[in-house]
Image (tube, rainbow, N blue to C red; front, side):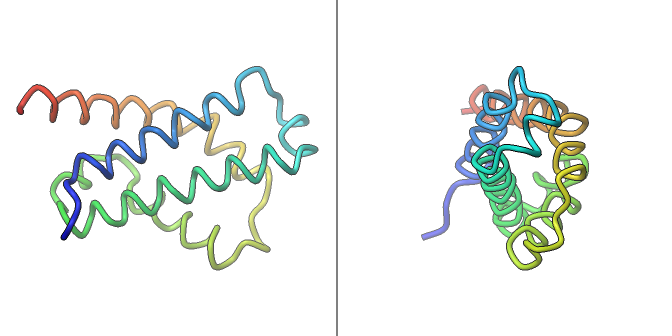
Length: 117
């Protein structure tokens, strides 16, 4: 049985929240020197990408509202299949520059879904 689109939005939002918590108060130097932190951030980015990928199959119109969704899904594919080419600077740039906006979009979508039910 397929999941409800709300589940995938929730999963992506939870992963975004975890990343924000993981990097709070951290610098790029902290990130690049901490294998556990890098692993945690990358894992959550994979979850976000997979959740949006599944959402795209279940509710294409909904995922289309998420800015950069195809790049997020593409990064997930690279992280899973091309793990050896991921650069710390790229990941840090994503979480510092793009994650806050994604977090906000997902939060809004989830709130809108809750209001419509």
